[in-house]
Length: 115
Length: 114
Image (cartoon, rainbow over all chains, first blue to last red; front, side, top):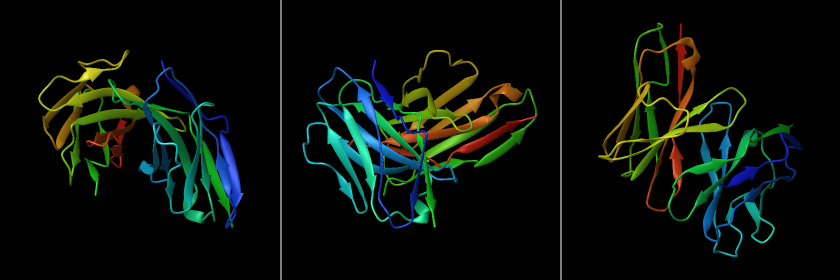
């Protein structure tokens, strides 16, 4: 079974600076998807970024980018120019490309942004 | 695009009553919908997966007779918590997936059982 590990329960960053959230996963599959979701205090889960495993190019969405290292099974999220609104729980998730559509979530990282 | 709504956003009920939570994909047809439960300061726990027109697939340890799921159309799934008890109090979240395999989440429903 696949597992997702987020080794940083909490992180903090100064406003306007850059922070990187770690995520590693374990799988024997070669084709899959990886996601970062953000859950602010409102508790609405918001998709931040999505990566297909077959794509070597790292996904980017404005200030959010990932460092996808397939061989190392690592999928870190970099937030540049951090804003107060980035404060939230961040969840890394894995989904198989075939078969099950379930998401396997990590335990989350709570990000605090200091003004 | 990819908006998912949930109703109600919060509900308080008496022990022994049943509560229905609706999940709708507003601007797309969802091939699959999912129901999660989230305890405070924890990650999401998948309860069941539902596909339109077929029976839901429940995760191990989830009582199917207690948590009834109906996926009536490609835009609507409902979760009914039957004979609710205080231990069922939680935050319930639904999600819906489109063809590109990304799950989009509803805003959640906070259930409090007195």
